[in-house]
Length: 190
Image 1 (cartoon, rainbow, N blue to C red):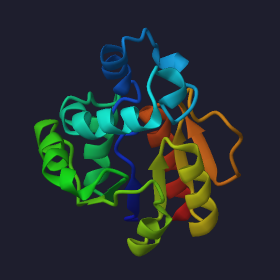
Image 2: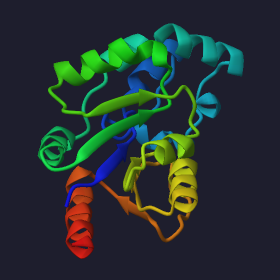
Image 3: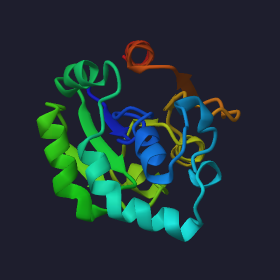
C-alpha cells in the first residue's frame, strides 16, 4: 500500500549534529551536541540575535552543502522510495533549491519532490501535499502537524526536542526505529 511521506531535511535526513562544529568555529565556543537543548541557537553562543541571523544567512548554503547524512537514512529512504512517495518539506529558503537538490544527488538520496517553504510552519505544506505521515526533528512542528493534519508524526529524538508529545507523535532514536514503526503502521493499514 503506497503512502505519501512528508519528510523534513535538516536534523532528520541530515545529522542533527551538523551545526555544532560550525557554531563552535564561528563563535569561538566549545559546544557539544548534547549542550544544544533548545532549537534556537541564541542561548548557546555569544552573539546578538541579529549577529546570529546574519551569520546563518552568510553560511547556510555552505553548511547545507557539507551536512552529513543521518545514520541509516540513505538506505531506508532508498527502500521507501520504491514503494512510497517521498516529499521533502523543509523550512529552508527556496533560493537554496539547487544546493539542496545537489546535496540529495551527491548523497544518492532518492526523492519524488522537494519543497522549500522558507518557514518552520509546515502544516499547510503537509495539507497541500496530502501526506499520510511526517518525519520531523522540531518539537512544535511535530505536535502541530500531528494535531492539525491528524496524521502520525515520527519525531527524531534530540537534546533540543524532549518536551512531552501528543499521542500521534512517535519518538524514535534513529532511522532503524523509524523504519520498524512505519512497517508496523503500514501492516495495520492493510
